Structures are given as C-alpha cells and as structure tokens.
Amino acid sequence: MSVHSSSYTNGISINEQDRYRALVTATSDVIYTMSPDWSVMQQLNGGTFLSSSGEPINNWMDKYLHPIDQEMVRDAIADAIKTKSMFKLEHRVLRADGGTGWAFSRAIPILNQQGEVTEWFGAVNDVTSRKEMEVELKVARFEAEHQRRLTEVVTSNTPDLVYMFDLNYRFTFANPALLQMWGKTWDEAIGRNLLENGYEDWHAEMHEREIDHVVATKRAIRGEVAFPHAVFGRRVYDYIFSPVFNAEGEVEAIAGTTRDISEIKENEQRKNDFISMVSHELKTPLTSVISYVQVAKKRMNQLEDKMAADMLERANKQLGKMTRMINGFLNVSRLESGRIQIDRQTFSLAELVTELQDEVLATVSSHSIKFNCIENIFVNADREKIAQVFNNLISNATKYSPVNSNIEVSCFGDNESAVVAVKDNGMGISEADLPRLFERYYRVKDAELNHISGFGIGLYLCAEIINLHGGQIWAESEPGAGSAFYFTLPAVTM
Ligand code: ADP
Image (cartoon, rainbow, N blue to C red; front, side, top):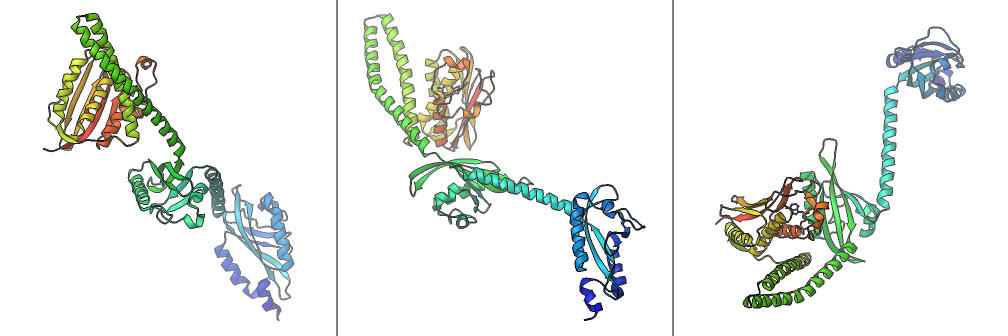
C-alpha cells in the first residue's frame, strides 16, 4: 500500500491540499496552521471571531483558549499527534471582542511524501449561539425535570386523586392514588378516555360535558358525585376541573383533583338526622303548648282580663317564632335527603304579592314596606314555597335594617322570566360575605349582628327552593348602603 493512499485516511496528501484548503477557508470562520507538535502556531486568520496573528507564536494556548478547556484541548492534541488523525473538538475560546465564545475546531495533519507531518491545518467555526441555545435548553430541561420530580412527589403522596385530561377526554396524567383506585398501571390507563378506563356511561358522559363546559367558559367547575367502590362500598367524591391555558390563553388541557368526602358526608348526615330528630321531638309539645295558649287566651278575653290576654298573645307570637325556626330545620333536613316536593301550579305573581302584602302589613309595624307589583306575570311554581321565599327575604329586610326605615318589594319581568326584588336600607353586606350568604348555616360575623338571632338557614332554603324551580337568586349590597335580594322564576305565557 502506498504512502499516498494510506495518507488519505489519516492525513491529506500534498496533491489534495489546495482543494481542501480552499473549501475549508470558504466555509470556516477561522483558519490556522500549527507546527507538527503544536508547540508553535504558525499563523491564524481569525476573521471577526478571534484576533488574527500573522507571526508564529508559542503562547497561543493562553491567547486563544479559555483556561477551563486548555487541558481538554491538550489531551485531544496529544491524541491527534499520536494517531496522526484529525483533531476535532468543541471548546471555549477567548474572542477578539474579549468575551468567551464556543469554537468547533478541526485540524488535519499535512503529510509529506514520506508520510511525515509537516504541519497541521486547522479551521474553526463559531458555534457560540448554538452552544448558548444548548445551554438554555439544558437549563430548561433541567427545570422541567425538576418540576416533574416535584409534581411527582406532591401527587404521589396525596390520598386525593390528581389527573389531567386532553381535549379529547383522554387521561394524560393520573397519580398513583387514581391508578390504584382503578387497579391499573400507568401504561394501561394513560391515553385512554373515561369509558375505556371503566367509567359507566352516565358518569363518563357527565364528565365529558363538564370538560366541554370548562373549555367553553375557561373557568373551573366543581361537582360532587357518588358511586359504588369495588372494595369500599358507596363513596362520595368532591371534584374540581380546572382549565390549563397555553401561551395564547386557550384551554389546552383540563387538570382535575378529586377528594373522597364520604366520611364528611356521613358526619353531616348524622348531624342532619340529629337536628331533624330534635326538631320533630320539639314540635309535638310545641303544638300542644300553642293550643293551650290559644284556648287560655280565648278564656281570658271572655273573662275580660285584658292583661292576661295580652300576655298570652305575646306568648303566642313567640311560639309562632319558635314554630317557624323548627320548621326551618325540618325543611333543611327534608331538602338534604331530597324529600322536599315541589307542587307546581300556574299562578299570578301579582296576586300572590297582594296576599302577602295584606299579611305583612297586618303583622309588621316596625318598617314602612312598599309593594310594587303591577305587571301580571304568571309562573308555574310551588305557590306556598315561593310565598316562603318572599317571607324570608322580607323578614331578613326587617331584621337587618333600622326600625322605621323603608323596604321595597317589587316584581317585574318579560316573557322569559319574572324577577322579584326585595330592597332595604339596612346595614348592607360586605363583598366577602355576598357569595356565601346562601350557604347552609352561614351568618355574617359582625359585632352589630351578634344580637340579631338566627341560624343562617333562611337564605339557604330560599336558594334551594329557587334552584329547584330553575330560577336564580342573588344579592347586591355594600356595607352601610342597604341590600337588594333578587330572584328569578321562569315565566309562563298565558
Ligand atoms: P339568619 O337571618 O337566620 O341568620 P339567613 O340565611 O336568612 O339566616 O341569612 C344569612 C345571613 O345573611 C344573615 O345572618 C345576615 O348576616 C345576612 N343577611 C341576610 N339578609 C340580609 C339583609 N337584608 N341585610 C343584611 N344582611 C343580611
């Protein structure tokens, strides 16, 4: 084998030098030549990247190489010299502008006819921006990995179910608690939708509708669902689906968390059963006390003992108050167990208001109450329960506003719905309390309110009744500026 042909693999023959040099010079940012043992840099044409040097120099390493990478370069050179093969390395350099840059450097040995290295011909490409991007990418990957590990720790150690859906209702993440509940591995469950993961039709459909809703409204949704568990029996779950937004603000996924609230529910049930039982037990003696008081009052009237009759009348009023409270509790427990019935009939709201007006004006003298219900709107609803809602709102308006102040009850509406408003000029409600007023047992915590008795169930019952009718209920208020309570009912065209 001739020297010439063998030099093709390890070095480059004299005949090929010119062509090679021309090609490399055209495609590189820097060209340099080195003595056979690399101790002297013959010359370097640095372009805009490195400062050029026309003279042979010995200390080229310190001039051009970043101190951190010098040893690595030295090793690679020793290797190239030993094998007479191409030197090829990415390393940091000291740039002409004084900064640090990244160089991709190659050098090939130039051989004479005898196969001896006469010099090394090198070329450098400035790969600084690519390297910087690589570093950024590395940092980003590290961050992502770090984030992933954090998420894993958080989601692995909670008994709550944590998961993620894509927009096609497929699970893209499920934490160990959820996988364990399904009795599936990650690979079995991920990429599959609800049905494929064993959810029943109704359940899968319900969640798919909710996912659509989250995507359309871009808002989180919260729900409660009960279903039988293979091992633990019937369980109740509280869940939240939240939108995950992309950079453009569009929903790209849905994140979900589910908590088993079966025990909380059981405790609640026990409490409700207790309240219901106590209320029932109190009702029987109360009913007989009321009838005794009424008979006694009649008797005192006949005997013309006005003072005793008056006192019995007051006792009667207080007993009425107690009855209303007890009925409130009984209604709450009926509602909770789904035993409240809505007996619908079509009636005129204006007529109902007129009746209520007579009743209220006869019994309430502490406030000036105006009724304003001219339009004759018909609704298909439970007349008694709607009357109860009116009474609750009017009673609250009197409870939470100063004596002699004005209260206004009005109704208006169109073909679609009837709107009722009860406005007072009382103490008002803070922004923080407004959304919570309709929760069961919720009362505003305020020194002023301490002496006003109540259990926080009136508005809860109102809201439940209105919701059962497909209407809405809300309050508008500011502290000190009075309150307005509104509710709507679907209207019936006659
Ligand atoms: P209760 O009046 O028995 O406490 P409700 O459920 O009727 O229970 O009302 C809940 C809370 O809402 C009340 O405790 C009160 O703080 C507040 N509230 C209700 N109506 C009004 C009103 N008209 N003005 C100011 N606060 C009100």
